[in-house]
Image 1: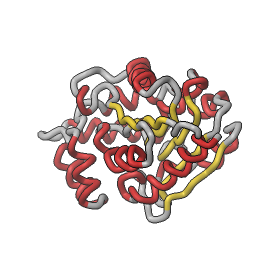
Image 2: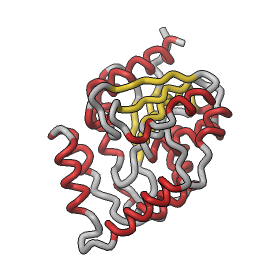
Image 3: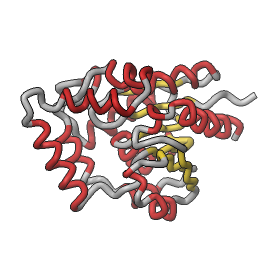
Length: 238
C-alpha cells in the first residue's frame, strides 16, 4: 500500500501559516503528513526582512521537515514562491498546486499595488483596521479567526512585492516537469492570465473554485480542501 504524500502549505502576503488550519487538519485526518510554514516577515517570523532567498529557504526547510518530497500548495504570494521553488527543486516536489497567482507580477499592476500599499502603510495604524475590516467582510467566521490568528504582517508589503517582482513564474512553470494544478476562485482578479500560465506548463490543469474570491482556500475552504485532497490521493496512488 502506498504511503500518503506529504503536503506543504505556503500562505499569502500579510497572512501566516494559521490561514491553512482547515486544510492541514483535513489532510492530517486523511493520513497525510501536513505542514504550513511562515515566510520571513510573517506570523512567527514577524520583523524579519522578506527576500526571495529567505522565502525559498523557508519552503526548503518545510520540505525537509516533511521528509524531502511533497505536494506543494501555495496561495497568492505563496503560490509565486512555490512555483519558483518547484522549478529549482523538481525532485522535491511531487506535485504543485499554485492558487491565486495567474498574473505575471510586474509592470503597471505591480507598481499600482505597491503604490496603494505605501499609502495604506502611512495610515496611523499602518492599515491594520482596513485589513481586519476586509477579512471580516469577505470571509466566513471560522476563516476570519484562522487568518487573523497569526497576526497581520503590516511591514512586509513593500519588500514582499518588490522581491516578487523579480520572479519569472512563466519560465519557472515551463521548467518544472511535474504535474501542476492552477487553482483560482471564480471571482479572483489574479486569474486574468490563467490560460497563458496553463499553456506553459508541461503537465498543467486549471481548476476553478465556484463562489470564491482571491483567498479561495478561506472563502470556500471545503471546496478548496476537496481539490487538495483529490490531488494528494492521486499523487499517493501514483
